Each structure stands twice: as structure tokens, then as C-alpha cells.
Amino acid sequence: MSLVLIIDDDHQLCTSFSKLLLQEGYSTATAFSGTEGIEQAHIVNPDLIVLDIRLPDMSGIEVFEVLHAHYPKLPVIIITAFGNTETAIGAIQKGAYDFIYKPFDVPEMLQLVEKAIITGRCMSSLVEVNPGPENYSGREALVGSSRQMLEVYKAIGRVSSTNATVLIRGESGTGKELASRAIYNYSDRVDLPFMVVNCVAIPETLLESELFGYEKGTFTGATHRRLGKIEQARGGTVFLDEVGDMPLSIQAKLLRLLQENSIERLGGKEPIDVDVRIIAATNRDLEKAVREGKFREDLYYRLRVVSITMPPLRERKDDINILVTYLLARLTKEMAITSPGITSEAIAKLSRYDWPGNIRELSNTLKKTLIFNRGAPILAEDISFPSIIRPHDATGPAIAKTIQAWIRHVLKSGEHERSYDFCLDHIASVIIQEGLSMTKGNRSQAAKILGISRPTLHAKMEKYGIDQAVEQDD
Ligand SMILES: Nc1ncnc2c1ncn2[C@@H]1O[C@H](COP(=O)(O)OP(=O)(O)OP(=O)(O)O)[C@@H](O)[C@H]1O
Ligand SMILES: [Mg+2]
Image 1 (cartoon, rainbow, N blue to C red):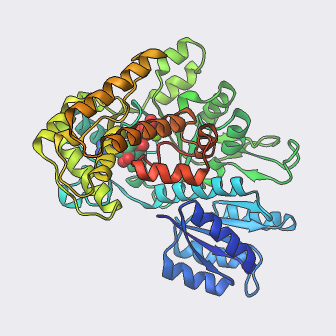
Image 2 (cartoon, helix red, strand yellow; image 1 turned 180 degrees about the horizontal axis):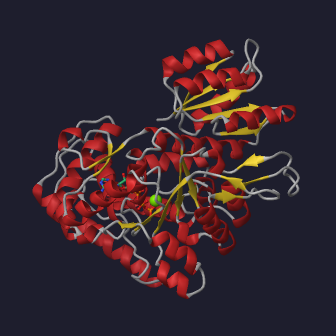
Image 3 (cartoon, protein in one colour; image 1 turned 45 degrees about the vertical axis):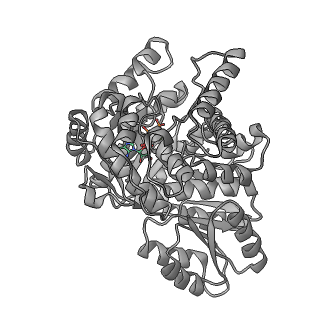
């Protein structure tokens, strides 16, 4: 569970914001002065700090500087009043994650909190490459010893110490993000920021300002200058996730960045030199996108010079055994339970499946099984594959038939003492997963289309073991 430290002398704000965060599944700590805030940060080891710029004993900026010197990878969101914008921008230039005006808009703040925590985690948690089983517990790692994965490790080793732009390709859930973080971990820029921008979850104009920033007065609402993630990375690395979905107008700007190492803020008059390393990822067929005129050919050639392709799990089934051991170690640590063990028949059943959602799907399946099994060893019959309805199965009445057939199968097999609850839970978990996948993992939108509150959605995701990071929230 992520912990947010709120440093603000406004007791009421601390209390209500803290309550809100608790409802959203975070834990919190509060401090009412700068000195107390710094002390607390050392004690509670937060994942994010939300810091008021005006504090009774010292300025928020001073507090930020102290904290940033100690914990350079800890994200800090500054809360400021309108009059203090310049100071807040100064803090961003020094490495704060972002700022927001008081009184803040709750959904906007929650999105910011979530993004900041993800960014912080990406920067500070090391992704190991091919560690031994003694290092599996709770760590993030790329595991697998198949020939295909050994090629991937070699490629990561070759590119990480260079400044080359890297394109990571592969189907959904194959570990593209993990590979990008491994490259960052082993690069010379490891002490500098790692900024993630998801090109698909954001509308075009927002994506442009997210990447390149804007000048004050460029459009209605641009009340101050805003730095984009590329500038904010301050010489570090920017991970452009789903680059294949980037709109053409922004592709042009990206090409220019890659060729000339400069960007222009929206409404800016001068190009700004930047030194940033770009890692891009996509699950799209870029060649097809080029043929269809959706992806610039020149950018395609520029990006593909150094590329790494993550193999789908069905092509490296030898790795399933080792992946299951790793994932069980990681999941049980996360869930604070002891590993119940798994039979070889269960592993054989996992190896027969084709895993269209790759390792993410394998991980979700194991998590769900651990939850439903409540500590009992995992047998073959405990494993059911996540989506009972695949898009190509059929539509309309055929879907009902598929569900009926599946329910009949469960009832007939007599494998589950609580068959009724088991079927209901499975169907409910498919509905939640579909809601999330329709909205690319945006939980607020998913809750809306499902007609449930965000906390309810969270609770259900937790209950059914649906990966919290299905995709990044926009
Ligand atoms: N080789 C691997 N070893 C261990 N875990 C892995 C491996 N590859 C992926 N995972 C795990 O699978 C999940 C998905 O990985 P990741 O997010 O990197 O995939 P992705 O390719 O970026 O997917 P998408 O295209 O859907 O964004 C994560 O929980 C990650 O830790
Ligand atoms: Mg990804």
C-alpha cells in the first residue's frame, strides 16, 4: 500500500485530504510544519509527499530542497496559491513532480497522486535482469531462461550504457515496461529522473503539453508556464509508452527532438535544447501503421535502429515453470501470505494455455487463484483462465451460450464447494476487467461506465485480484 505524507499547516485540509486518500486505498501521514514534515519523512518513508508551499516555520521550497537532497527519487507534489506560481515552477525545475493550486480539484489531485506514485516507483525500484531464485521474493525482475529471453537480456546489456533511443516492441503484457526500466537501471542516467508518458491514454492537445509544456497565455486556462515531461526529466530518461498511438502532429515534434535535441513549448518562441534519452514502446504493427499513413515513415526508421522485441509467452513456454516460481514468490510477498505451493499438474495446465495476455495474464491468474484458494496448495482444477468470453467466440446469444456452457462445466465438475458464489465472482471479475480494458485502465471512467463508485471498483479489483496496474490511469 502506498503511503502519502501531507505537509500542510492547514489542519482541516490535512484531515479531509487524508480521509479522501484513505478511501482511495492509500495510507497517509500528516505534518503541520516544515520541521515536522522533514522528521516524518525520515520516519515513515513515504511513497509521495504533498507539500504546501507556505508553512509557518520555513518555506515549502526549503523543505523541498532538504527532502529532495535526501530522497532525489521521491516524488513531491507542491500545493500553492495563485500568487506563488513562480516559486512552484522553480520547484519543478529543481525536481518536484508537479504542482496544483489550492483549493484543488479532487479528481485532478487524485490522478496526479496516482501518476506521481507510479513515476516514483519506476525510478526507485530496481528491475533486475535474470536473477537467481534466491532473489525472487517481492522484487521486480525480468525472468526466464529461454533462448528468446537471453537475447533480450543481451540487447538490454548492449543498449543500456549508450545514449541510443530504444524501441521496445511486443504484445501486451510481455514486459515492455519492465525492459524499459531495466535499461534505465543499467544506464548512466540512473541517478536522473525516469518519466513515463503514456501516449494513448491522453487526448492529443493534452499529450502535447504533457510532453513539451506551454507558455503562459498560449490558450485559455494557460495561466502560467508549464514544463513538459521532457524538460522535467532534466537530462534523464523519458519512456514513451504506446508510441504507436501517438498522433501525427506530435510525431513530427518527436522526430525533431530525436534529430536536433531540441523542443519548443507550446506558444514558445525559441527552441530549447534538451538532453534526454528516449525509450519508446509499442504493441502496434508499426509497419502497417506506416502503410496506412498513421505513423511517419521517417520516425519509424529513426526509432527502429535500436529495437528490442519482447517474445510472447506462448513462444517460450519453457519459461512458464520459472515464471510461476517467481510470480508466486512476488505475489505472496505482496499479499503477505506464505506460498501454498503448486502441483506439477497445475503447472502443466498453465503450460497448455496460450496466454494471449502474456505474463500479465499469467500473473493475474495466479493472483486470483491464490485469493480463491485461501492458503490451500494450487491444484490443476483450481486454475481457470481469466476471460471466459473471448471477443472472437461470438456475440449476442452465443455469448450467453458460452457462459452457460462454462457454468454447466463448473457445476458438473463438482470441484467447488461454493459453486454459486464461484460462478458469480468469476462473472463479476470479467465485468470489472472489461470495464477497465474499455477505458484503458482509467479507473474513474471505468467506475462510471460500470455504474459503481471508485472505492467500490477498487474493492472489487482487490477482491478478484485484478492487477492494480492493468494500465496506467490517465
Ligand atoms: N520476463 C518477465 N519476468 C517476470 N515478470 C514479468 C516479465 N515480463 C513481464 N512481467 C510482469 O508482467 C506484467 C506486465 O509487464 P509490463 O507492464 O512490463 O508489460 P507491457 O509489455 O508493458 O504490457 P502492455 O503492452 O499491456 O503495457 C508486470 O507485472 C511485470 O512485472
Ligand atoms: Mg506497458
